[in-house]
Amino acid sequence: MKIATINISTPYKVTVIPTQMRFSLKRDLFEYEGQKLCEIQYEILAEKYTQMVPKLDENGQPVLKSGKPVLEEQQFDFTSPVLYHTDSKVIPFELYLLIESYRASKSEESLVLINQALQGFIFEGSLANFKLAVTNVQ
Image (cartoon, rainbow, N blue to C red; front, side):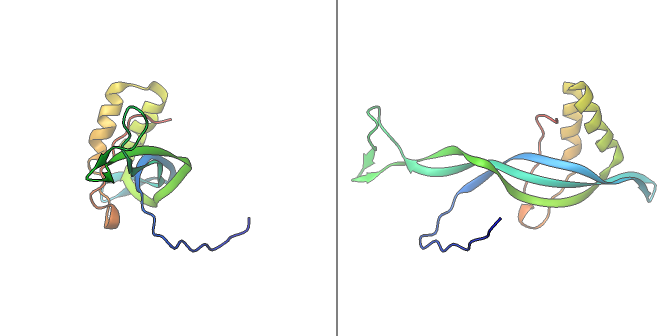
């Protein structure tokens, strides 16, 4: 694959929406200070983004206010998922087993327990306020 550097003369910003997390076991069961732990490698991907676009009336024409288009926020899909963040994290081995159990059973009760456990999944740096909640595990 060839790499080309591009120059964008007009800055372009979009807000990405993280929608997917991939993970794999990096380090199997180990004990630390009496706790059973494991380490996962994970990637958080964004499949959607938001952008401010002109609001359209029922005829498909831009809605104007004081001669300027009224903007509204809309969500769009990326052509392919965009990598948002990647890292590794030590988690309780019990949580890993619970996730694997949910993958086999698809139990709603297990999903609730997973999301309760993820409240302790603390992110740092630029993701400091990011809260992880799971709706499905494949």
